Every structure is written in structure tokens, then in C-alpha cells.
Length: 249
Image (cartoon, rainbow, N blue to C red; front, side):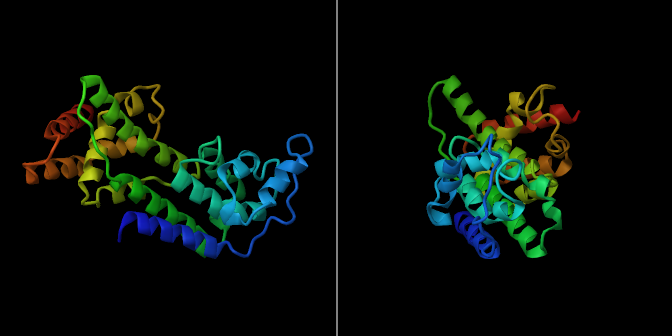
């Protein structure tokens, strides 16, 4: 199935599964939440609420604004905005996903947990396999483009980790992709030293470090390189494999 269609299907499933919740009883801390903040979350049908409409709620949900059931009501729209627009108003999705552990969502009904997990899997498949174009230019321009591909993977992975979800199944699924774009994104990720290898890098403590050093990752890249002799950017694949050998040593 097309990754975009699968992602949209997973979003529809979220709306269907969480349809019985509401925000009619919304309340907030009088020091942090105004009547206008609450009214803005209720002024439109759920699917029509924009990121700006929900940005204050996204940051304050559960802790100072609304209940757990209110959060479940908004969750499909919040996740949809994250997937399709990259954030919720002025915030990225991290504050929202970081609320899930507060709710002990691992105790929610199985159908709700499965809908969320299916969404995350569909989202990452979309990220892994999304087509891109590398525009020829200066060495600096090319380097910046490859670095951006690495960051495009890092951000959703770390946001999902905020929900205290094991990343290994998602990473394993990456290696099941036959898309050349998934291969090149992995190479870009490996080559971004600032992202994962330095002690102060943002992804240094992620379980992805051990996964990157694993045999399956090496075989995935090596197999693609030797079975696609006409692959573009073979130099980047070769460089990524050499880089991987060095960090595995």
C-alpha cells in the first residue's frame, strides 16, 4: 500500500476509535488557562481545528488543562497535525506525545493502543520512504541537504520515544523497506556525526546507537550497494558503509 494512503488510513482509524470522547467538560488552571483558550478549542468541529487553535492546549493538556478523556478526544486531530503539518501551531509534537506517559496509556483499551501504534508505524514508513531530490550544487549545499535527511528521521523517532515506546520494532521495519529512499535516508543518518555520535549529540542516548552498529544494518546497506551497480550517489553509500565499519570496530 502507498505509504501516504496507509498514513491517512491510520488517522481515520484514530478518529473512529476515539469518537466517543468529548471536550464539553473542559476546564483549566485559572492561572494558566483563560476562558478564551478553552473556547478556542471548542469553536469548531474537531477536524477543523487548526494548529493555532490547539497550540495552547497541546502544551497544557492534562497538566493544567482538561482531563485524560478530553485529551483522548483531541488526540486524533493532534496526531493528524503532527503527521501532515509537522507540528501543532508554534509547537512541534513533542509536548503532545510527552503527555501519553502521564495518562498511563498502556492501560487504555487494546483497540486504542493499537490505533496509536499503527499510526506511529504508518508515520515512520512515510518518513523512511518519502521521495526526495538532491539538488546539485556546492559541497556545502550537498552536505546540508544530506544532513537534513538525517534530521528528518531523527525528529519523529525522538518524539515517539517521548511516549516511552520501544523504538526497535520501528527501526527493524526500516530495514524491511525495499525503497531506495529508505536506503539513502539510512546512509544520511549514519553520516550525520553531529546528530548521533558525539557525546553531547541529541540522539546519543537513543537505543538507535546500538541498532546502527548491528549486523542487519550493515547487511542492508551492503546488499543494496552491490545489487544496484547503477545506483545514484554510490559514493554516499560507500562512505556510509565505511563510516559504519569504523564505529563498529
